Image (cartoon, rainbow, N blue to C red):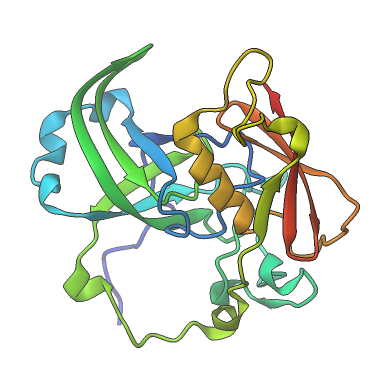
Length: 256
């Protein structure tokens, strides 16, 4: 059956917002949204979309779906097209087993689109911060790097989006137990509190979140060397740590 309507092969998207988070790099970011309940981020809109009316009614919802771009993982060929593979190696399987790309949440996809479910903590309609002026949404549980481009947000609908008896496939048994987290003695004062670092204290309100990130084991699944020192950047600090058995030890916190 012929149709006079031809479906386009490419649909243009506009970046409506970007995330403001404490992760300047990919390393250390939670593997899925919602894992770290205390992790705060802000959705800040691009100039065209800094319209308070666009958020009218959102205050009645508790959670959001964020549709965003894997901007750091786009593989572009010489012809300008995104390169993809029908199979990928999920990090949670140690990077040693191939599965179909559509059976995973791999960031290397035909279209580098991701989605995250986050909790709305606060809606601010008139924010003025540096060169930003406009509305923002404070959310918790986002698994996104600072500056990640967002193409849409949609309210989470519990009656339609929640499926209590859904199956988790190969990922279901992979939820690992949390690590114990300790800080090297030199980082603590006699009262057991973190010492100031280069004249600055680690933000007290972010310490619990840092411990959650570390307890989830931010190392790649295929790297388990107990002698290796790992590091990632969070909240303006470079966090250095080692893991032996089930104990993660923070060796140093370096002000960036």
